[in-house]
Image (cartoon, rainbow, N blue to C red):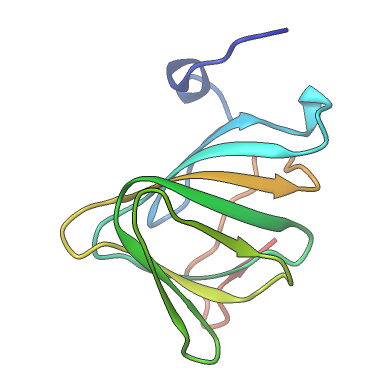
Length: 128
C-alpha cells in the first residue's frame, strides 16, 4: 500500500505541462498496477488535437467543463460526472471550457511511463 499526493507529483518528473494544460501522473508503469491514473487539467479556451496510438484512455470529469470532438465532427460536451472513452485509439479534439478549466481523472492502459509529453506544434496533432 502507498499514498501519493498532487504535491508529491508536482516535485517530480511526473508533473507534465503539456501545452494546453497539466497532467499529474499519479500512478505510472513503474508502480506495477497495469494502468496509469492522471489528474488532468485542460485550460479554459484551449484546443488540442490528440491521439494515443499505444494506449486506450478513459477520462472522468470531476470539475469544470469542456468538449471532445471526433474527426467526423461529432461533439461530446463534458461536464462533472461524465466519462468519455477513447476505445479505438481515437484521434480527437479536446477543448477546455469557455469560462472554466476542464478537470479530469484520466486512466490509460497500458500504463504510461509517466514522462511522455504532447507536441502541439505540428499540424497532425500530438500522438504517443
